[in-house]
Length: 120
Image 1 (cartoon, rainbow, N blue to C red):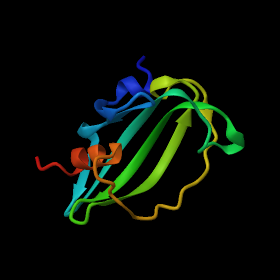
Image 2: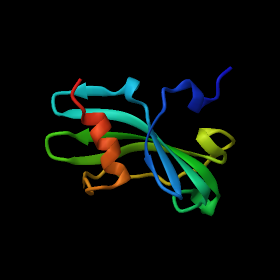
Image 3: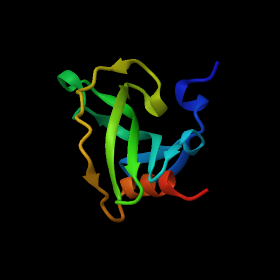
């Protein structure tokens, strides 16, 4: 049986010394100028900023919606895991409000945006 991260078609789209960012381009859904895609952040050191009670986590899986015509995105949902590549115990996460945010040039988020909004 495959681990949840291994079951997805994760493709590395960027990273630095602190985090590696993966996208699942095979699961992109598109509707007119909008695209939805899952991504995975795999951290080099434990994080706690998005968890309830400051519990540590090493990976975060998100689903984002991208407005490909206006270069913006919003977070739809996310989950945290104690282990790398979305393995280990689930970590309780704070909720997010899904506000549209502008794309920051040369960011890891922009790499995800370009993957989600690429023409097929």
